[in-house]
Image (tube, rainbow, N blue to C red; front, top):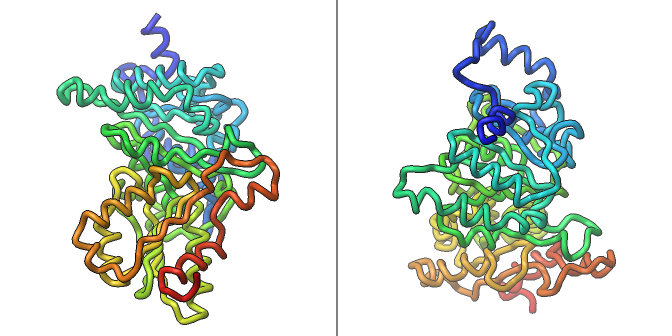
Length: 369
């Protein structure tokens, strides 16, 4: 039964005979892909391109999850992959997160590189034992003999009008677990470079996307358009250089933070905006160096305030030499400490927006209450 299962999931490498060179096959596959010309991509296109390129590069990579194949994915991230790679490498699963997450972990332990898509990370709560215990701890508990290269990916955090059960941010949840790497990308370039790095990583990686960003276009550098483009997991990016206040954010909150920085600039305030990219490992050194320059720190996230990503950043700054450089208390901007309301007017008040970040940054500079 096990052998039949794994033959269903991935091609038998020993019997694979290429009738054309890898470059020729890439060209053939690429003719089916979404044409990405110019210098911009949506987040959705970047994720799709990253998966396609890694599946072409490594035949042990495959995708499984609900509606990833025939329906092209709930958010169309896996669009066209079934036509390119067939149903042995793009696998529709039943609606059982614990079941297919466990299957992905088993495949990873057996030498394959599964990409396990959750329709939303809220549903991944059904599979959290597989992610945290089976995937996150096996490498350590085996004495470093059994790696588990699995990518768990899907939308995380609030969308719009989906209620309390479908609006949670799990960055802090998974960020606490030794053995997991946790990524929270913002731009298309983030998504492509970090997803490719996650697929190649020998460790289990929790890849937290944002539904509201899927259709957003971002500029792409020439390097980012390359099939060899990778971004290191565990390294933040300074999106905007400043000298007056440091604003640290991840995922969709980077957009609001950059907008806030634009508004602050009109008042002569130079805000430095850091895109975390990675939750675990956390690039605290980039944050510390910025704080030493600006002497003020504001963290921004869509998750709940208690025990969050911002809380961890605060703790590490207070415990480091950067604390001596602070001229004001660290400010945390977070989601409200309530289950996310369904009513649109209340939901809008439950998450940080650009004006709130502006207000808090000014408070850190003692320019408002």
